[in-house]
Image (cartoon, rainbow, N blue to C red; front, side, top):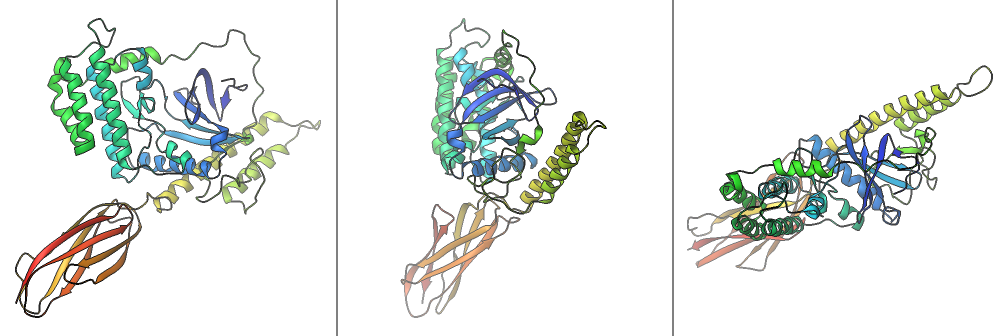
Length: 462
């Protein structure tokens, strides 16, 4: 990629770049000198209605998860707009990936199992939090210089398509990753450099857990990998080979052969963070917040924006006695105010998430219906209880009770809270008359989908 300024929002871009479905990924150096990543979104994708807003929401979900202690994801530092360009900046390098390592040769069995164990754990944590990754494949599994496996691009594929992937899609992606690593392990020969080769049972183990993931789930597959480490060379999971391979492929490309004169300082007012954009703001109607960000629609400025503009105006009015602008002081003012507004924005975003303004969507994880075990006598009033377990998000559950002895349908709804995961839905069933029957009550959770059903049976004898 030809980037004339070689920097974006303080991140220095390198010559190492590659294309994905999202746009152009570039290895970068963060402002504090660490390896990082920068994604320049394809303008044909990010410019579609609603896409930019969904990307911002996906990133804010990630930041909330990381703030809550989740590991295993590539942390996103910011999403910024510079003119017509939209960039995603990461606080960690996004290369090399498992795909990069496989392109250079087989991955050692102990490292392959390490990748699968760590990615399975991350996916389990995501699903428990009520979200999914949506695009698990070798190109989104990043290997750090220490050999750790981190997932990148979480939720971005879904954001550009306007969909929410089911956990089963992540499981299928993980299983395909396991099969690819099994094939790599089985093709490794005794002379494989720096990666080694495992016995055939390693490939068989990976194939087995790939099949297990689809039937018994990721937790069972991960437990199997951990319990059968003895099949690995050395008898233990290890990151050593991964770390060695990653360090061998993580060197940035060399500078250009012909030196380019240094670019003039870029006005940071042209670069605007998007992570403060309120939910529901249309990508087709960008906010007026700094030059180069469009003017299709105006709205009242927030306090942070007024501070930003006040600092910018004050800096621009400071002049020398001869009438020439004092450029260095203006740049310092812009830097100070940009830092202040970014802190205000991030604090507001975190507070909004803590108030559940952007909490994960409500999901029902399980239901269980319980009826009395004792035989019920004449003219009984029977209490049947349905227990519903959710992911802890606020929302509304709609449900219905059906009874097999008549066609009555009892419908209802329940508002859930962000601090509770367990709810009871009672059904009171009155029976009378002389009879000896099996009575069955069926609970159907209609929303949020998919529809879930459970039932319980008791005996009425009179």
